[in-house]
Amino acid sequence: MDYETEYKNQLNQNLQKVISSLNTSGMKLKIQKWAEKFHYPSDEIVEKIKNDPIFGCVFAKDPTKQNLYQKCAANYIEKLPNVNNFKTLPREGNEAKYLMNGKLFSGKDLENTSKSTKVNFTWKVGDYSFYASHKYTKESGGGQGLQYTDIQNFLEHARYNSYDKYIFLAICDGEYYLQKDSQTNSKTRIEGLKKLTCQNSFVLTIEELDEFLKSYVSKE
Image (tube, rainbow, N blue to C red; front, side, top):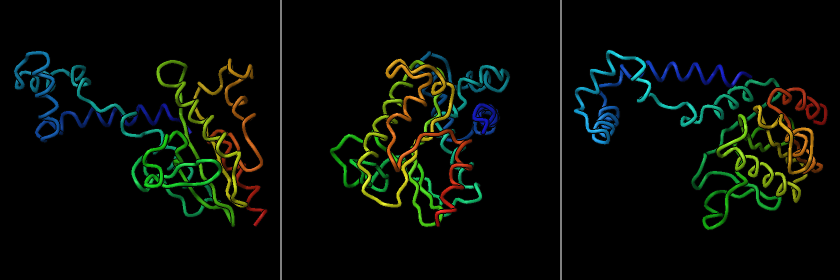
């Protein structure tokens, strides 16, 4: 699973779309706002984009704003041989799913409650239902610490799991999870997270998932 190659491929596609979408209402509005902010005529900005590919990068979509990493993970998991009924759950709204005190709730059930325990994917292997929180996190800095906290909260709530055949997974990918965990003094953050697991919750990378799921096929 090469997230960075997928990022570069998507970025190249987005750069190409800048030129092809110059006449769309969305791109016209984007250029207009940029031109007004920096006090340039919009038509000059359009000509500059046409003649300067580097300048066109300013108006290309950032792949991370397109939920790229989750889409990559979903595509990978859905194709695994033992995965059935795979679903990517909504990012927010009434139909989103959250894990609270070992139980699953929809967004409409938690209107005024903190929602740091979101479930991204669900699928089945035999009689077992899997609910996964997925994070791809690069090096330290920015909001990476918040993603780490989200995973910790997810695993803490999974400790109270009241479903016999529900498995909760924290799928942690990226360099960030391979660095030393200063909170628990663990060799890596992913090893620190594993200390928070219980009988029906696990922490792993996406590339470990296929082998992990094979053990549940034998339990059918």
